[in-house]
Image (cartoon, rainbow, N blue to C red; front, side, top):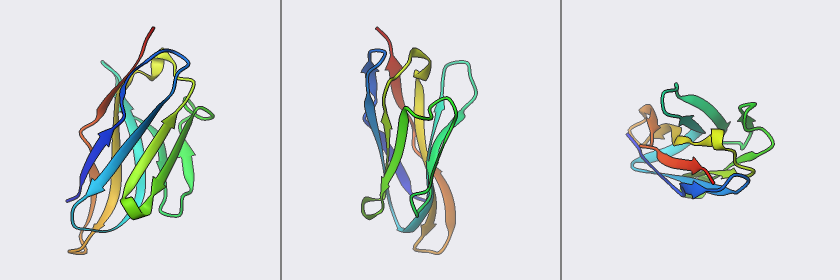
Length: 120
């Protein structure tokens, strides 16, 4: 199993920007898809964006044009640049990764999440 740790969250005013990072560590041979999800209080977890190992990206309609997902394969890290933030973007953001371990086992691992609050 790989360990994923998110960073970069916090409090930002509406219209502001934040950049989230998620670093994977452990006995990793390679990582296929990586993604970001979010969960607001009282709501179900929702998918935000994903990126393949070849850097193909997809976005939820709610964030398209405002958020950008990217990755650094050498660092096993995925990023989420969030611009033009809105109060409805407030949530705990979690990353996940489809990992091939050195044992040749495949796992889908999750970070613990990080809080993003958009408020004036």
